[in-house]
Length: 396
Ligand code: PLP
Image (cartoon, rainbow, N blue to C red):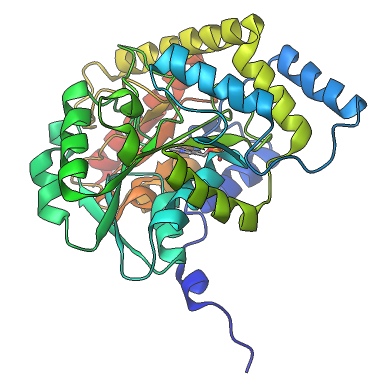
């Protein structure tokens, strides 16, 4: 009998796909769609970065490189973490360049978890963590956070879900899908919990530059955090480099050595010439100016969103202070975010992601990404959502 992996069979294929495919199909048929479903920014990679990768190609920089990453990129990452985040990492032993932050997350999880171990997920969260944990037979444990509390993580909540099998907790700051940026007190509480319980922290700071009210503290910069932290970051979101597939993991040398083992067997090394481009992204002043412009532009979008939400009572949400996501709860009259998302797309031409994708407790939520919607389109899309909700209530 031909058999396949029951673990892989049981993993959901991307829950975002159904809406995405339908939105594309409707667009092809000529219908304009407001695309709140796309989790990537709508700008191109800065020219200076593209040119540096092109030059690397022209110079034949096309062979395998070191598993850990090319020295100039490792150095550029160490300098960036030191300069911008106050986190101190040795480029030779404490940083690993990965094929996107996605591979970094997978390799970090493979390094720490195994059959019988548990991963704490104070959610809603990006589904990747839970699926990677399940791939090694570990158990993802969702900790439901409440919109009424601004999706706050507390020590008390963490203590309620920890068991002797817990090995790691995920902290995604700023958060996909809520857009929440955690205050320093939360980081300190998570750190105290992790140290006292002997648990690692997977600090995913992928959206770090996208913080509109105040700069988030990097978890790794807290005193005493480094030895328990695997920091994940990358180039996809801030530099419009989603297709380059470059990210990184930073942590204590022994742990990064283990993450590197998983990385060796997954992808060997990240793409050589792309790494040259990423080194330029972290060192060229033009690239830094580019990010500053993008973040200012995204803040305008976020402000337009909050303005448009003024007086709207149908949606309940935590203040979107970072990333480029908004995660409102639908009114009690709308029990399923999934069915609402389909009706909204078909009837009003607005694509959103059903909240259930980010955790079982969020079926009545939807996620909006404003990564691909300039302010005018964003306002129009939000109005259509509110109108759809009001019409459905009248019709009920
Ligand atoms: N971390 C979070 C929270 C994300 O939302 C994503 C992508 O959506 C990633 C990491 C991975 O990004 P990439 O693999 O493109 O570097």
